[in-house]
Image (tube, rainbow, N blue to C red):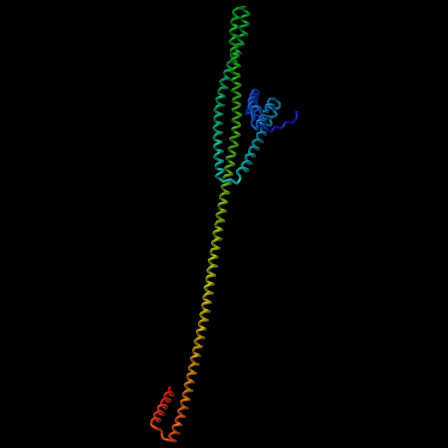
Length: 364
């Protein structure tokens, strides 16, 4: 036989336990084949599901099933690994860069799902326990009926020997018919109970498979919750880091603005002081120029006054000299006139008045 390589858990596909018997496998196959056949199910993945249901081809063969059972731990380990890797990949793709609130909402949703799965699992376990009790009760009934059948068969053998010995044909025939009717009823009841027991076993196995599937779902959801928690913690740390970065940037920006404002104030103060100094310098220079102009004007006024005074003095001096000369001339004329002829009284008065005026101007 060629080497077989399995990658799918066919027990999970058929939703049965790995201890199911051939009849349970066949019943599960018929049930799923009818439900998932492409002719009856128009869903997009119906064909793929129907191909998976063909796991019956593997499990119905005893030798292939033994080989498959030997590979089952590896298959389940690889399946769990692929599911976990897929889950992590989906989380990384779907939730990367999200906020902590997003992860908290995702955790809440997954916890609700986990709670629903837990309730469903507990309900199935309770129902399976009921099936176990019914199976136990019907198994006891089968054992009791089988014991009665075995006992009846032994009694029939003994009675047949005894009646043959006594040759009681007529009595033995009626008794035999009664025993046969009882045996037939017992066998029919035994078959019915075995059918019920087989159905109960199939239902129990179906529930066990669903419980196993729910266990896998619970594990997967728990892993998702843990991953969401880790992602939430990481997102919270990133959010805190971003807040710290923003605070540091804001502080740096405020410090920069303060430095710029301080520099602006210093620059403005320097410019103001420089302008004030320039204005003071200009005012001082203007004051000096005005002072120099005033001094120059005063100097010119003094000089002009001195010149005027000098001119007035010179003019007075000249007038005095002229008056002196005129007086001298007049005195000379007077003396000459006196010497020449005698002056009249009016001429003497006029001469005296002129002399007085000349003396007065000379004194001034």
